[in-house]
Length: 490
Image (cartoon, rainbow, N blue to C red; front, top):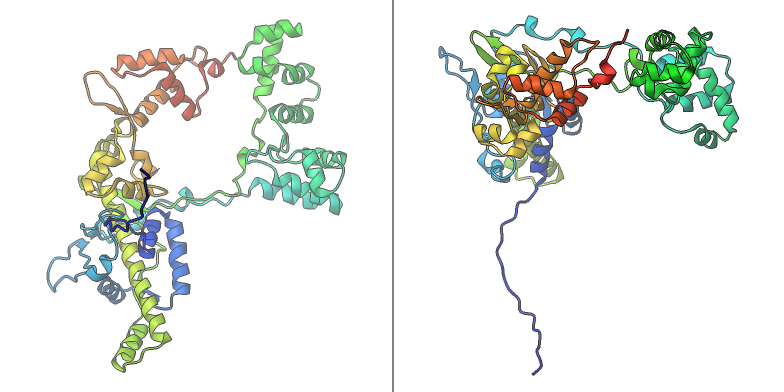
C-alpha cells in the first residue's frame, strides 16, 4: 500500500522577544563608557533638533525634571534626595523590560549631595597626562636628521611598526622593503640610523638586539657582557652564573660583574613615554564616606542634561489643532519620540549604575572600611538578585564603568571575584588572596625568595586552602617573576 505525504496547514502560537530599535538603544547605552555616552549625546543633539541642553540654573533644572516626569517637592517640605520617575506607560509597553533591561522601579538618588564638595573630587594630576608619546619623540628626531625623502618614508614605516615598548614587532625589513618599493638593504640602513636615536635601544627587533645596542653605545669595551647577551641569555635569566662561568672559562665573580652591568640596561626603551592610545580615566560614580555611611554619587560633569524643545512641541500642537497632516508633522513626531526615549534611557542608565553601586557597597562594605584583604567573593547573580534585575543587565552596567572610592579608582568589575576556600571561616575573594601573595613576596628575603610551594604553606597557616598552580597563576597575573628569577645574587 503506497504511503502519500500530504501538506496540511496548521496554526501555532508562540511567544518571541522582539528587539525594537528603542530596546537596542537602551541596551547600547547601558554598556557605553562615560566618555562614549557624552560623545553619543552630543551627536544626538546635532542630529535631532528637538533635543536641547538644559542650562545650569535652578529654573533650568526644574524644567529638566519636569520634562523627565520628576515630581517636584512641595513648598516648605523637606527636599528628598531621590526623585520619582513617572514613565509614559504607552511608551514603556513597547519594550519587554522584564526580559531585557528589567523594570526600573527604584528612584534615582540625586547627585547634588550637600556633603560633597569639589575638594572631594580627584585631582587633575590623577587623570591627566601631558607627556609626549614615543612616536612623537622619534618623529621629531627624524625631522632633525639628514634623511632624504625616500629614507624618511622608510623611517615612518619602521616607526609605524613599533610596539609600545619601542620594539619592531610589526612587519619585517623584507616586508617593508616590498611596501616601499626599495631594497631590503636600504630599509636595514635606515633601521640602523633609527637605532641610534633616543631612547637608546629603540627599534630593536628583540631583547638581545636591544641590549647589544645599549652595550655598544655605553660599554663597547666590555666583551664579557657582550658575549653573555649573545650566547647566554637563558642562563642569565635563571641566574646560573656558575654554569655560565664554566662555559665561558671565566671566574664567577667576573660573570656576576658583567651581569650587574646588563641588569643596569633598559629592556623596554619606550617605558618612559606615554603610549599613543593612552586615555585618562574619569569615574562614572563616586563613593564617599559621609558620617558613618558610604554614599554613591553620580559624576555628571560634562554630560549634557537634555530637554525637549518647547518650540517644536508648540509647532506640533499647532499642526494637530489645525488638522494639518504633512511630512513636517511626521518628522517632528518621529524626532520627538526619539528624544523622549533617549532622555528616559539615559536616566534609567544612570539609575541602574547607582543601584548596582549601592548593592556593591552593601556586599563589599569591609573592603571600603579595611582594604582589599577584606574583599569578599561576589558574582553578578548576587547583585542581580539584590536589585531585582537580570544578570546580563548588571554585566553591561559594570563594563567600562569606573568608581572613585576612598581606596582608589577601580572598574566596577573589580568587585566581582571568585572564592577561595578558607578552613573554619568565610571564603575569601580571589583578589584578597592575590593581595596576601603580594604581601608575602614583598616581605621575603630577596636572596632566598619563596617558592610557590612555600607560599602555599604560608597561606595554609592562615587557613587558606589553595593549590600551588593557583599561586603560580595569580603570581603571573600580577606580573611577579618566579622565585628563581626574583633571586638577587648581588
